[in-house]
Amino acid sequence: MRRFAPVAAVMTGALVLAGCGSEDSEAEVSVSGAYMPQPVSDSMAAGYLTVTNKGGAEDELTAVTSDVGEVTAHETVDSSMQEAGDLPVPAHGQLVFKSGGNHLMFEKLKRKPKQGETVTLKLRFAESGTVTVRMPVKSATYTPKTGH
Image (cartoon, rainbow, N blue to C red; front, side):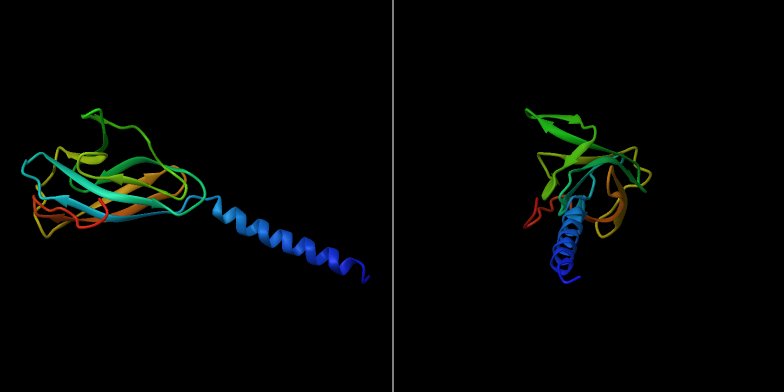
């Protein structure tokens, strides 16, 4: 029986390490730095945020919805804005929406958001499910100090 004790200890250690590795192979998304500059138009607005994936597996942003209107993700390619499909969120990486780059477009606004209010977004991810974000409305000239 004493001969099996070292083998059992090694097997237990291997299972523990395997369990630790499997958690790291999942996506783990969070959202920070969300804001909407107060729109100047009654029908359109833009939104910015950063999605961080601390997990070891890539995820994908597949849809965005909001309480104020229709939302689509756009990307800037060669100085031209175009609607984006699903956007990857790399493992141990970020998907950044910022002025001049990827951004959210709010169209057919049900109401014109004003500075000081918040807009609710639901971001749907292929692996992580739905994340609800409260996006503050900032002044039309707001520029974040960090992040984007």
